[in-house]
Image (cartoon, rainbow, N blue to C red; front, side, top):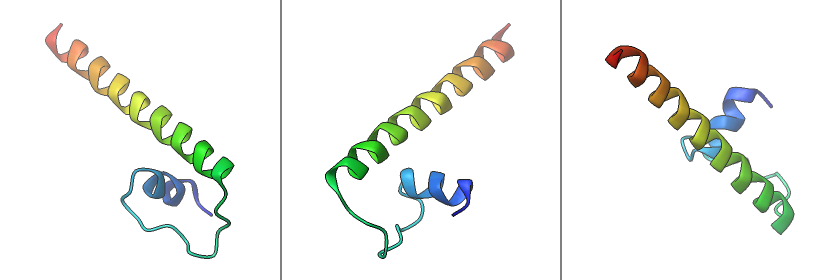
Length: 54
């Protein structure tokens, strides 16, 4: 599976593959990955705003 497809699934842009296993531990892992991706995007946005504002 491609990296971009996995990121799209984490951010609810693309539907998940119904054939993947569903356990609570995988759910926890996906939740933590989702949080880290969102924080990374927030940090990038803040850095761009600080760069533009001077």
